[in-house]
Length: 178
Figure (cartoon, rainbow, N blue to C red):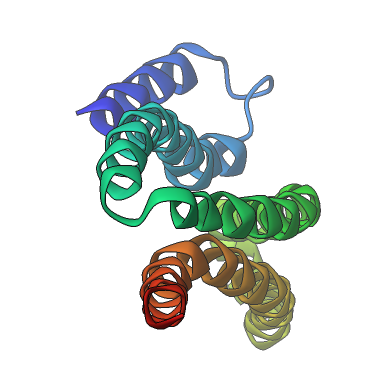
């Protein structure tokens, strides 16, 4: 719903601008990459506050069962949050570079499509296809860097859910035996 609303607002604004003042590539890019980023940020906000409530309830229940070992997830949270924080700093700049590469390609493609008749008459169609292809390859390379950083970020974020229960149970078993 938010995505559709933002796309409609951007579309309406782009339609109202005169042709000299607007760049169709920027509007198209906003309707795809930037709107997706805004929606993702909203989802992340709600995930964060819900996780805090979930964490509080979980630790209270865990402490009633395993006593001081309930603090182990906090140590893992500390380590994972530091790793995620470092990755998030780099992710922002990489995402910006990817958005710029997408915007450059969309702007070029929009300009080329707008003057296609002249390009065909000059025999430059193959050159333009190659040019747009090169822009797309650059965009894909930029996206690969961003996606790998996201994979590492998600891995560090999910490490808590994977390792904390296992380590807590293993340590509880060791302490219970002693």
